[in-house]
Image 1 (cartoon, rainbow, N blue to C red):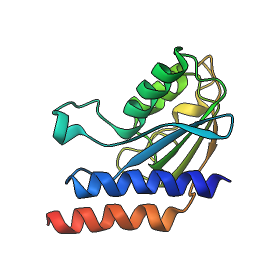
Image 2 (image 1 turned 60 degrees about the vertical axis):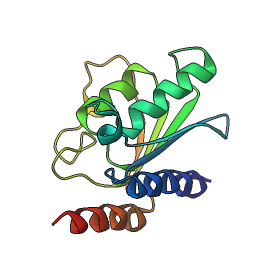
Image 3 (image 1 turned 30 degrees about the vertical axis):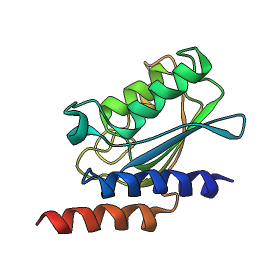
Image 4 (image 1 turned 90 degrees about the horizontal axis):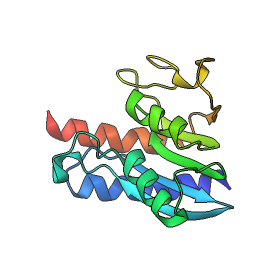
Length: 147
């Protein structure tokens, strides 16, 4: 089932790529159904916080009319940064599934692991490397075009 949802996140990342944004896509599921989808829009919106995860969390909160996303899972094509990892914890998301690792800014083990900080009051189950090659190839394609 998680490949189906990651495939949808990849479709969101492709939208970002078409808009000349860093190709990261995210979807949030609730009880096995997608309730929110988003992709990076930092350049388009000129907002440092317009990461796919943040935008998807905002949509999910609006749809559920709650900031508690305890019955929700997040699928994202790139390992979340520290800002997004914090938002995931604060939203009380149950599980995180991510594709490509981010050795420069990843907050799920690559640079730091926010989800292993025992001082935090919420635990997120993390599944890494889901459809990693597909996710990473979009990023590689984007950054090669910028060189």
